[in-house]
Image (tube, rainbow, N blue to C red; front, side, top):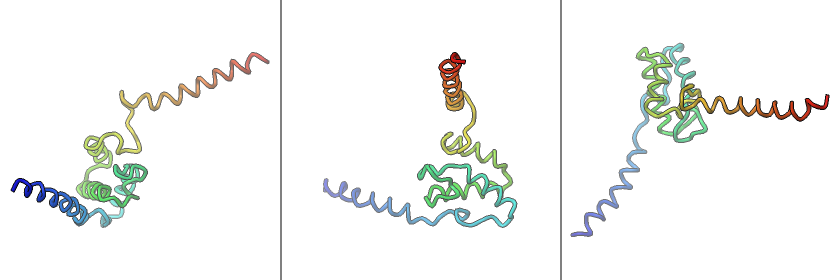
Length: 135
């Protein structure tokens, strides 16, 4: 009897994982909005949001189930009248800054923007010191 519970659990876990992938996609995952202007807004926003599973594709291009759910959320919220920036803020709050291809400039991300400028300035200074004295 002691072996029966672990055996049943071992059989149930793969079944639950397979059942999750068998779920139908969200209604707006693959269906566009009827209003062309609203769909254009949704499409523009979806192209700036990163698929968290694929990581190198936007949710507009990804076929991952999670990207489909995110497309559904974007289209549903656009259809409900939310602004694209409010939807982006909600997704960033929910998934973190990594979800956006357009990161916000704040205390955590400013070094990412400043470091390239500092490297270019340092290289320019080194070149000026190296070749500027010869003239």
